[in-house]
Length: 597
Image (cartoon, rainbow, N blue to C red; front, side, top):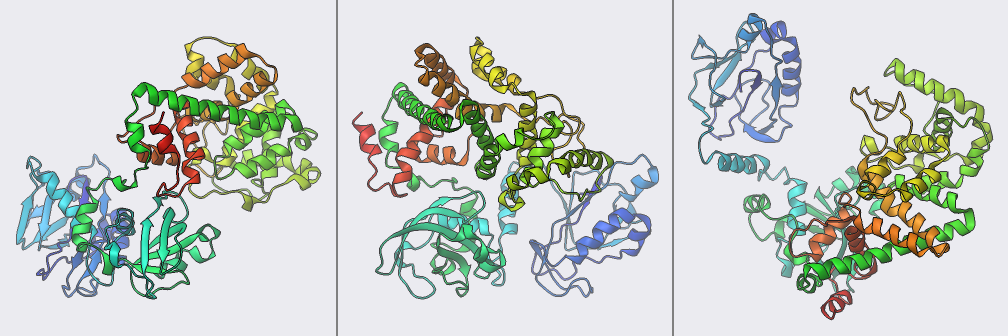
């Protein structure tokens, strides 16, 4: 594309004799910014993913069949006529601008003229892409498949394709054997894990004459990736029962399966299939899918609502147990801390919540003081200030000035920094931001009373959760209103410490169960009814992986649950039945119970 961006596509035809000839000196002289990017591109030219480069006698190309990276160099629109002329393409020796949307250069020789303009010499094939072609998308799609896949023996297929082959079991299942010759039977390939850890959970396999075992499956392009990716030293991979690779000898103590000899189709066909196959195999459906599909919509909603009420009552009972030991306010704070830790940092947050009595006993009670106290005890404050900006340094200095006066008194209550899990976290979900939010609530000192006022308020708005978000807001913070983390640049737009999605999670998992527990303890039936009404009318929360997997397994059609209570009910069904049965559903009582209902 030669206009406001320049792109070079290198032909992958085997017969190409001269692909590209590049003289970077004029480019360096005239367009240093482009030259920098172009030199970087040439440096890793043979490490890319798309196309083949055939030897043209140039020292930059080290031989046939080197891989080519697809790179684009963008030029900002300039007003200068001289700069615009640099972006003109001269074809057949004439300096004329290109009017078409793109130029696809095949078997052409390219070089740079004295002004750094791309020239095409001796064009054998030069065709303009016709965007009105009704088959253009099909061509794009076929090209993507071809570009993404190479059958060169030195390069295995993409790991994503191997994961799809395993998930859908596109292998000859009746003749599987591991690298050491053991016969392998796969009763269930497991459920795809989209987060950190092994690729598939809860797989069921049998090796030789042994008993079926349940565990994790790790998919790697090469057997050596097990150590290269650090799996050998990662406790999260301790439950792996089978290592699946494309080809090559086993490199671990684990049973290893090579996919290449067992695939049920050529690799190119599998790659094309993978672009159209639905992400969830129909064979993975739970045995309860058919009886659930036979229920009317009203009956299904009633079932989910009943399961949701059980979940609400169970959470309320947990609040009651905490309150008997620590009091009602402490039970609320522990619930809020845990919920703001998400699933990966609930225990560090729980530890901080348990230390609140000691943290209350020292230092300032304003927002900055609580920020310093919580961040310091969490291990996020040091005296090594970054150099990103003056604003960050000044803010960290203020925090440190508060923390160093209290640090000695709170040494026994500090957590190691290694306790926190940061991998895969979005900046908005960083524990530091959640601790700043909690510091705002602690500084205000009246959160339980504000929540009580919210519960006593009436109207549809409170049921939607919008009112709750207003009650949970803290005073604006000059730093955190415009920064996601300590290291992020300043943002012009507002960066909220709490959004509607997280407020919904807090309401469903902490606040309403806490009120339900108190109402049950006081035998206040009217209040219980109001709380349960709020619970059942709450709009749906964001889907998580557990919910998506449950919907795929239990429901015949794609389904978006219409209420947070229905989501909670589905999660309770998973907890009560799916988690206590193998992935094959053998021995699960739920399908028969639904059928007899």
